[in-house]
Image 1: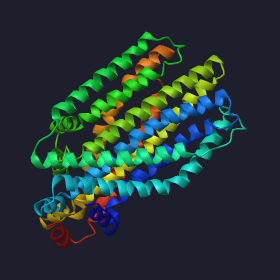
Image 2: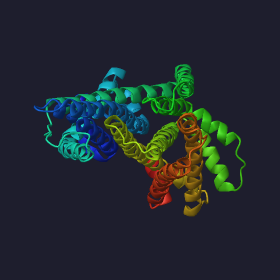
Image 3: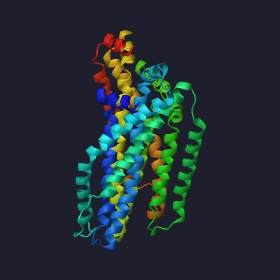
Image 4: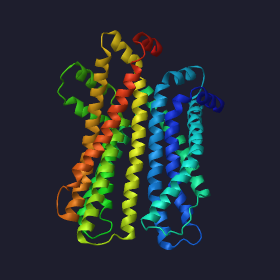
Length: 438
């Protein structure tokens, strides 16, 4: 099955491009920040510089590990779902579930290994640039020399390959559950409610702190993250609930709502990405802006720890933004391309290309509004307690601008990818699209 997996990758490289890109970005981020551990272990590095480098490597490296897993999982889930007919044919030809699993995992590991190898060079350049940022801000001494050692390379290879193998196994399990009609709704619901309760508790614990506590920003931001995770796990139910309460006006809106209701489970990945991106970026950037303005108003100078936290916040949000954009583009591109036969059938039934694009646009608007709405609620749950304790206000003036920018990015990626992909699919003649998908 390993030979079959390698041949599958070699003969159909386009299908694995999304996984390759996710693995490449993930490995690059992990190795870039893990190289800070190698740098901190160098000769002549002072204690403050070593602490700064170690904190950056630990915090952002942990986020990078989670993000590479989710990014690869989202792309592989779509790819495995689209190969349902091929996997069923192999199963009918005598392949066992274990053999199919080894084939899919082998494909994912092979693609992830290629992505990791390609990421070594960019990771070294990124690590040097990151060290320069720390030195320019005074957080690391100028005499510290950059090092890209065995720890960075081993962590990049190990984490990326393990994430790819685990994501492939998870995607195959999801496809099997969808095929047999079974699922793990109870476990998913339990995790969702647990995340919501833990997030609410973390956000409320902010009121037990004082405005001068160094850890004041952590509980509300972590609370917002956990709340967004809880909402993301409930994404299909939330989307269905929103669709049931929408007034329908026009054929495109009616068809869009019907399509989304039928595909709520498949679109959960898109909603999860939008919710997490909106909540994490809005809560983190708003809280950081409030903190920076409060420090500036008091006339105090930021400490090294405060500068480290600010740098990490901006870095984490930047990494999340890149990964979420990749996940959204991959998921929407694959899902929209897979609907070529559906679009062909609609056109043969009398729909014009403009009407098909209108339906896709309406679906994108509904997805964007739903994801941004629940992500905003999670962000507010973290921003409001922090603002009340830090400044005695309720809603900071920095919130609206930050939220608008993050919502605009999410909407642009969602609508732009969906419409651009649908426009490309519609170039194929309707008869050809139906015949190809049959």
